[in-house]
Length: 251
Image (cartoon, rainbow, N blue to C red; front, side, top):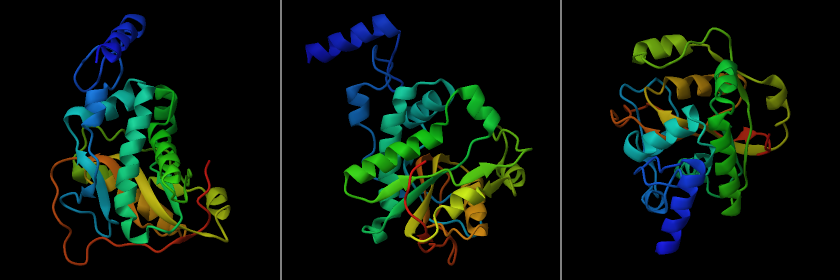
């Protein structure tokens, strides 16, 4: 219609924006590109799969519009993309939790290095997890998001590292926040680790390890996108954790 086109053109003149998907002037994600986003999620096992990785799900391959959205939100402060990215993350969470559809959920974002958060001026994964939790609540699920994890000093930037280097870099790099975990005592919720992209699975597996070391079982991994080298897990690979004792509260 003419009116949306005029609004987008006016936005471009005022804000200098363009759609990250098709470069159409105006909104950071135009209505057509938003309508074309995935509406379902599927298993996204990396190859090779880290031993013991909880079932991972993503809405699509890391490329084209999904890649542009993730990078635009994370690296270029296109904060308006937090809403559609959070919506996509909610789709993945729903797939992870399909077998426990009536249970409370707690979304735990993979933590970013404090220096990266300061440089970016925001925490993109936390933003997406909070948005996903709000959307799930609007859909009738009992859900929340909480920062249960922190990074330890000495973790290098993952960009440019191969699978082995990523695993070595991340080994022991995360820890649960004791006070946050203690606040969850007394009630039950299924925990889903949330990230923007599943690549080698090293980040998700380290987050899972840190939570489980603190007595927090992990049901699965939810992400917006996954790199395309995927395969089904080997027999006995992966696991589904039980419910966490704790409320699906927000932070």
